[in-house]
Length: 333
Ligand code: UDP
Image 1: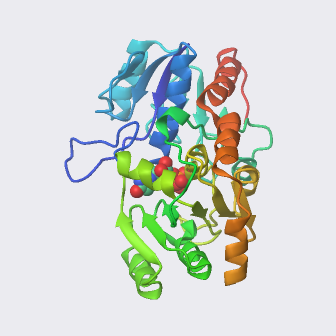
Image 2 (image 1 turned 30 degrees about the vertical axis):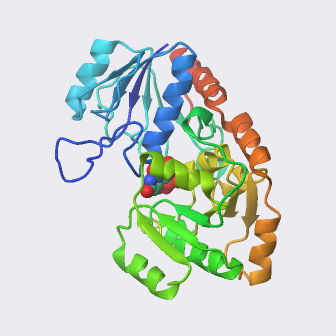
């Protein structure tokens, strides 16, 4: 199939000509998801037009468009003539005059702008959007893009936005209780939150900033566990935060790194088998934290489970089936 993949164009750094690429230079959940999905679709014989990520690495079977405005995106889609348009931008980059068969993967947890032919990352996210029957397709992972290490170093990892709803403070409290250092990596746009974290956990937290490339891979691979203690409050739009898909879970698991998560949003659906789920608000004693770490599944089991559930071939097949439904004229909400 010919697939036009539309993602929201986000600027990277201070240079106005630089865009976050697929895969991203640093932070970038949607960009990692799309990179991995493209890996699977290419292996299934698809041809891809990538829109919204100028400057992305070129590879066989993928055309990287320079278009960022809706009118240019529309022209590029028309010139390509895709069987299906796959929107990841919640219409932010999708031309209003797009008339081709289209599906939209939703990456946030509000009610989406365009509900027609939506695809969700979890049942929790789908329910929050008010849909009961739209397909749920999990976030993919490509083991070739991860490293695997069976014996881990003695640190815990938080990787992501350093924000209250991502549960970085809860991660620091867990690590403190366990007596294990916590490496925190990711953009810290809420500086007060980061400062308070460093002031309150000076001997536990090591903040390394945003990471990309091999530094990111190494951090994920070597960690004893990744902490995803997502909280339902303090979401980016002031609302309740329901962790929609959690890219970090599949990435960590495919690297053989188990996950300790809360039961917020998608996490109780995906973490059992690759880690442990704790109830939101649970006070963690040193005994609890040590017990949780001691009972995590082994690196080998975690990796096998991740690849089996979320491997890029499996997820690409699920997307192809949904593309075919849209191409045949089926409409769902
Ligand atoms: N990430 C990264 N470098 C960083 C912080 C995060 O590459 O310094 C990546 C991380 O590996 C993941 C994504 O950014 O692929 C975050 O996606 P997730 O779904 O976990 O969070 P959200 O999209 O809600 O921010």
